Length: 209
Image: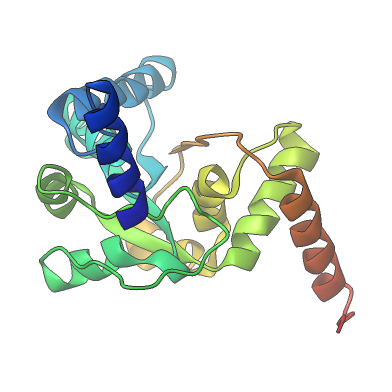
């Protein structure tokens, strides 16, 4: 994250360009809110939305948009356990940044900002953290069943819905109409194939060394 910011600042100085933030900007948040408007326009009976979380722009827009239409709708974030700064922030009541991260979902490594954090704090009902192996299984499911190639960061919402934490939580037992944001198809095919091989090996009881 630090190197990305440093590189962006260097490019801005060299080119005189304008930085378009990925998340921590009111205009970005507003634009992302159209996701929930499209969801509820197509499926008005949705009771739960599950969205990947990183810098918080997407889920902030979704939460504001969805709850402005239906205040009772549940908005849940999905986050990898190896980069769970948002979950820790939610639990502590303040922004937590991580010195190290370790997850296949490399699109979810940004930290919450001063504009996204208050929205996540106040409008996101909870955050579900999932293991990388569950993310890979969700990617596999998307490919086999939906015939869609979804990157790890995009498949994490499905991984969250399939997790025991979601299925066994009594607070969410009434969730019947669930919308899941599958965001992004930037898949490294080599890494994806290795992940599937490892997943299949574990599921078949094989252990490679």
